[in-house]
Length: 294
Ligand SMILES: Cc1cc2nc3c(=O)[nH]c(=O)nc-3n(C[C@H](O)[C@H](O)[C@H](O)COP(=O)(O)OP(=O)(O)OC[C@H]3O[C@@H](n4cnc5c(N)ncnc54)[C@H](O)[C@@H]3O)c2cc1C
Ligand code: FES
Image 1: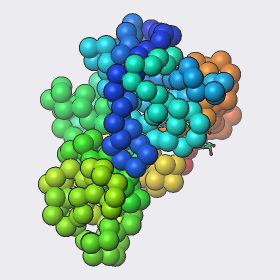
Image 2 (image 1 turned 30 degrees about the vertical axis):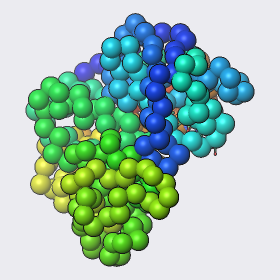
Image 3 (image 1 turned 90 degrees about the horizontal axis):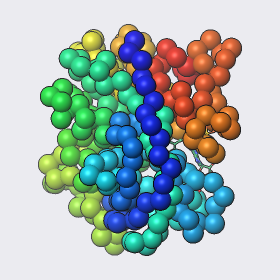
Image 4 (image 1 turned 180 degrees about the vertical axis):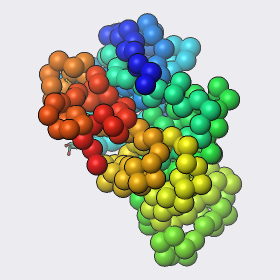
């Protein structure tokens, strides 16, 4: 297995240069910041809005980083994420990045990569997809699951197959029973929100994101399966991957205080259960064989 080398980390101030709501209470945030190393898919940043009133920074996966611009996709869930999402343009935040181990993209070369994302788990897999496509690799299946149409960050979902747990008001109901074109059968935006939803022409299906996964993996026995999202979704998908005998990689979330392997607040059991691994430093990307996960 290829060693995944950690990159040089930078602790610095950054300026907020862009913020746009892409889905309900979820924001694309752009920061101007110079980092000493490139950011790879799966790596994250500890970000601390200086006016937040929270003692500790918060971890966010990096969506994109080029030309001194760092993009994050931030869902508001509490004080830290809300403060970051609402930091006015021109204000400064503190950034510590890039952190953690990335997806081992070299190991994926020449193999069909199947992505399964949910919620803000889209972020590292969006970056992984972009990196793979940019280097001429195949990504035959990119599946994104959300509960409702309001949770779809439309412009990030081009090329993704969308699974909604709840049928939108205008769509026929019944899990797994309906497929519609996002430009046609679905409302273009939830009432009154003014937000974009699914990408035009993309396919949307009502049903869990794992609905067709077993079938997909049966047809692609040499696939690599990469997962990031809510725990229940990842575990369900990881079990399917394991049963089909494909290589499974998960990108995990834990509550983090330091992001650098010092405080031990993010430990999880390693495979066999006798030792522990830190999600911030040993992960957040793990092969299923490394950890005691499913
Ligand atoms: C490696 C990593 C990458 C992440 N990437 C993103 C991202 O790209 N976009 C994004 O919006 N969020 C991401 N998160 C989650 C984000 O860090 C948390 O939502 C944020 O720290 C919450 O802080 P808060 O002050 O807003 O809420 P808090 O008040 O701290 O928490 C609000 C609620 O969320 C729960 N919670 C907080 N952090 C986590 C967590 N890590 N896992 C599960 N539950 C949690 C708390 O228990 C509480 O119930 C990532 C987390 C990790 C560890
Ligand atoms: S967050 Fe401190 S060790 Fe992982």
